[in-house]
Image (cartoon, rainbow, N blue to C red):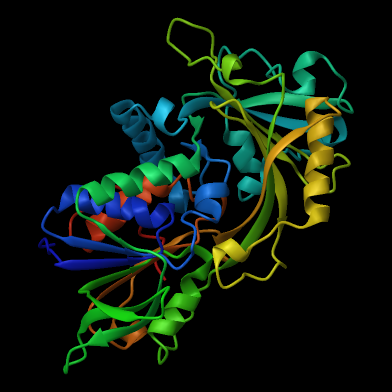
Length: 415
């Protein structure tokens, strides 16, 4: 395919998918003007800033396996090139499954919900040379946790973790340094077209109520769970339905004397495994399946309490966790950490975009779907894998917009 070079790319949604796309677009084409439009008063106020930041290389179904592998390798490379360990908390991570004995006998495992079924979990082979549960978990300190069986399922060569807020900020800052322009807060109002119905611009409304039109010959929708609303606003005559809904998740970030910044050791070839940890627990009396992560900054992230029934607000900043939800997470934390006293430093609720198929959408929308002639792209629906797949998604989307060969197989991610 011949390479094309749009003059003005407008990305609606400046979360981690949007800023990843801007980052790689600005690397691949210095002549392209990039605009980022974000409606939320606070940047990265949903999953891009409040997710755990867990990364995996080979935990994916066939449709996303190529993209998942590419993105994981890109995370490692980016961290090596830009001191990601210090700048955004990148660290290899050993991953564990924590299951009650009766759950193990039935084949159920704590990380099952991340896959399409138990068989995917069983494909994650044990990490050679791993040393058992981390000491910050009660199970690692020989404290009884209802007879939980703890198994290593991945080592630091195939799983890792970042602080997604810090990574998102880095990607945005680098994009802006290369000329990308951020319109924030700003709400997309309408598209503009030429007399022959070709896309020429996007009109946005600023916080003060004033409106302006940005030149646009390539429009990219990366607004997460808000993507269908944006699409309907900009293409009101379209009959196309974007099958994206919400999987809302509560989370807490806490500190424990059993895991501190001093506890963290960066793995080296000559040393013990070290690094951070992820543990996926089965529902053994919690009422949900907890997932808990230690991170390089010395904090611990706990989540897993998910629902599809919480309405999505107009803005990400309007999302608020429920008191009952946070109490359930705190109860699970006490049990898993073996501590009655918790130092909770942050609570959160983020709405992750999901699709019925479990696959993200990464697709061009033609005139039949939009009603206009021009380059229109949609990319959303990564579910629990938005941070993990962010860099690969940004690269492949940038390559697609520029008409270049893509670095991963995304043939099954169309609309």
